[in-house]
Length: 375
Image (tube, rainbow, N blue to C red; front, side):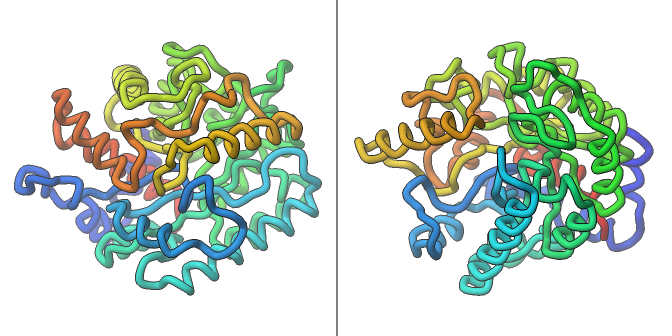
């Protein structure tokens, strides 16, 4: 671990108290250790594909209560080919909508701005929400907007989505040109503010540039292993090692890219996760499902809705190879609000120790956030 990462552990009494609150050694004493773990979905959302643009359904809020998840990093739109002014306005409205939902459901949801907030969410039994961008288009022409977005709660940012923007190349760009001058400046600005640099959709060279240039740990919040499934959204062994050496994490997603465009299974998730552990080490792997918290029901209506979603992304030019109408965006055995508990049980049954499972469920990501976020 770098000296910058170690600094987060000795930053004073507050950091130490937070660490104690988040890392109680409860595994050996509890038959259901998931109940006492810090559980973080490093990229996900509330509800499922049935939800529209209106207020969250009561069933979605109940699923949030029942999930046992401490906090969830959720995407604030837009992504892709949106003008900067329009993207900024849409992002501000998106944050405002989620702020209203938290105010409507204070017994179930809460805001996450600091690592101390994660500890508070865990203690209260509420689901904490971390706001993140999957594209820097909303501030790519004006970094003062990033200051304002930070004040509104933005804490995780991907410089690029699948395609090129003014900050750099996304993972589908054939030129693989890396960060632009503005992109390097954006990484510096995010470091300064205390925003985690997420490289999940970035091109290979963009990711390499950001890993090298960042002064603090970075992350692939939601990805898979390119060694097991050669896909631009999955990361190579060299990239996984580079993020680990920086003190960061790589989170496993539950996406068709794990299985050549087919609906993923729990076996696919575990196969990629175990490979990532072998390459990066158990201290540098996490979970970012890239899916809704509520389960999906595989009806014809769902199939039609998913097919329309895929077609819309293709028309917008932001879809990736392997996004197919049959590649459903959930793992059948991991399709409930308690899916991370099911995954934890599967890992324990395969002989992974309880301390390792606790790291994967959330404490690894907490360590990274402690190193990056401001107190």
